[in-house]
Amino acid sequence: MKRAAERIARLLFLIAISLGCGLPSFGQPQKAGPFKSSAIQVLQIQSEDVKLPAEFQMSLYENVIEQVDKTKRFQHVYRDGEMSAMNAPDLVTLRCTVTGFTQGSAMARQVTTVAGTTTIAVHMQFTDKDGKRLFENDAKGQVRFFGENLRATYDFGKKVGAVVRENFVTTSPASK
Image (tube, rainbow, N blue to C red; front, side, top):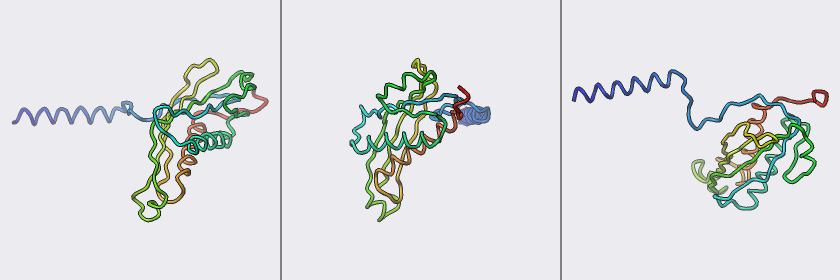
């Protein structure tokens, strides 16, 4: 019994030291940048493994483009398929893949504040023009209390905007 208690104490001691040493925490976004680019191309939202209604997929895409544009970090924000994006020498590409989706209920949210949450989990990958990965990040869009289900796509778009602000610096036309 005494040996078991000693082993548990040692284990707890090692865990405390590991946490105190600042070891990387898993599941946290990777720190990157700051990167500098004059253009970004946002590709269509992918959802192969998760069944996502079409209205959510379209709303996600539009909110991501709107929020990335609002950051003013890029001179040009291109949509998927725009050929003029290939002319940008320092193009960054954003690929988003839906990894989870729970459709809640706006009525349940209004009746109780603990039920009906809509959640969309998405993995983001930023790559350079050559396809080299710059960094990746995971984020969730949610609507928990009031609002329609599509509000979760707006919440996710805001989180993409925050990631862009953290990892990219503003470019000006003179700095090319």
